[in-house]
Image 1 (cartoon, rainbow, N blue to C red):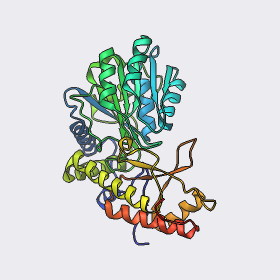
Image 2: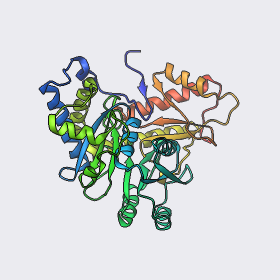
Image 3: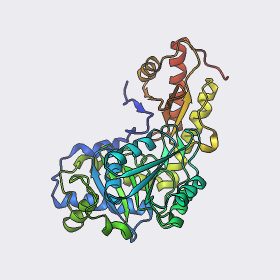
Amino acid sequence: MDRDRILLTPGPLTTTLRTKLAMLHDWGSWDADFNAVTAGVRSRLLDIVHGHGTHVVVPLQGSGTFSVEAAVATVVPRDGHVLVLDNGAYCKRAGKLTQMMGRRVSTVAFAEDAPVSPAVLDDQLRTDASITHVVLIHCETGAGVENPLADVAAVCERHGKGLIVDAMSSFAALPIDARTVRFDALIAASGKCLEGVPGMGFVFIRQAVLDGCAGNSQSLAMDLHDQHQYMAKTGQWRFTPPTHVVVALAEAITQFVEEGGQPARLARYTANCATLIEGMGQLGLQPFLKAEHQAPIIVTFHAPAHPAYDFQRFYQAAKRRGFMLYPGKLTTVDTFRVGCIGAIGSLEMQQAVNAVGEALREMGIPTAPA
């Protein structure tokens, strides 16, 4: 095969050659040239969310989950009470990490195949005045649901509660405007819709709450307030940064801007999603979600109801054809997932559909519309 396998996952993603080539040089972590790259990345991230003057952005080493944990520990006081809106696996992860950091946490459960309800949130906040912060997963990629960020933010603002948004799989694709949507913290990462490589998260923190975050975190390495203070003073990361990840992200953001920014990226991913769902439907594979709840990020499909189906065999057959799928995350239904994001277009999505059809036929599973 003369190309890398295409990653049809929620991240890591397929990246461009330009992004890969950016990682061919070594950088001094405290050198002025690298500090300038970091500063440029932080400024352009604020551009994307329209956060200049109202928010800071704090980068952090590690996967996206590192930054979710860091954001909760930094923003929520140790006597705070966090309400997690739970409609999937990543919501449950947010609840677990909040509890493990010693914060009081409550959850309100919703179905995995539908968005969380701002009306239910409104009732919860009216009923329990002890809640200080709400955690929302913007795109719950356990099933692929887009949750109503603007409406949830409006409810939190009306009640005077802090909002922490996990925008890991939505940032740079779905619209997020800090001028109209109030949040205390919003978390994303390098290896998602910006199409960089994994290894760095970043958290937007509202300046109005930043000073109050001092001393909240029980972690040295993951204290975002301390990380921000040090970076503001020196331009440097406190501890060894993922230099190659940062310069790859800088190049990926340049390509993001060249493409036309968030609207263009959303348009490409939306086209990818449409090609995928239509093509899979022609093979007899149906999405788990209703169309109105489906974000164009990752699509969960019902597994074939056929005795010959086995995900690992299916995965390996698709992998031999150059495409890497993702297992299902649901506990009640047998599913698999296919991502629509990364440096790919409708052509690659149609090729993926063709590969899935060939894989199923290899397994002896008929491919025809249900």
